[in-house]
Structures are given as C-alpha cells and as structure tokens.
Length: 114
Image (cartoon, rainbow, N blue to C red; front, side):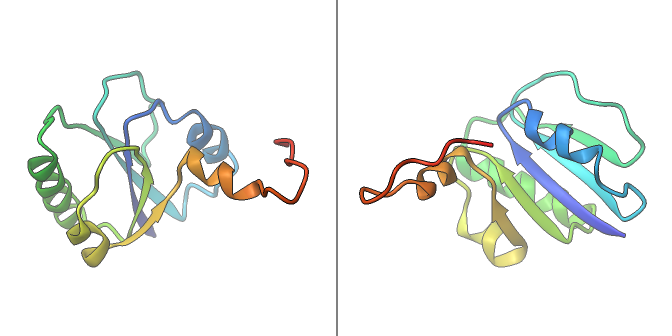
C-alpha cells in the first residue's frame, strides 16, 4: 500500500473529485493542512492541521509527521515555501494551478480547460 502525504493550503476540491476514481485499497493519504475545513471522512484518509505560520518550523513539523507515518511520496497542493529538505527526503510532486501557465505559449492559441 502506498502512503501519500498531501500538503495543502486549499480545500482540495480537485483531489476529492479524483479520489473517488482511485482504488482505495492501494493508497492511504495523510493530509497536512494549514487551513481548517471539513474533510471527507474515510478510513484511508488521515488529516493533520498545522497552524504554524513560521516556514522553518512548519517544514520541520511536516518532515517529522511524514517520517512517523512512513510516507512514500508527497503531493503539494501548496502555494507557500517548502524547504529543500522535504524535496531531499521524500519524492515530492508539485500540483499547483500555476502549471496551467505551461499550457500557453506566445505562439499559439490558449488551450481551453477541459
């Protein structure tokens, strides 16, 4: 079973929409959030709220929580600074709306979102 951490400062609408298509027997998720909001209740999803506004302290807490929970990968739905130590310790993938900009070029017509 893959253990994936999601670090977020959003409500994760796109993640929750995609989650229903995943085979939940293959994944468990640890969601670390900097905002309080209602999460979907599911046996394969654990939620941790960190209110720390200090970037260094926040990153240290994330690393410790991920080590304790034996996380395999981290998905970033996060728009603030993440330390290099997180990228060095865990396979980390940045899922961010700024990737939409890569779909546009000065030499082409902008793609419309599907």
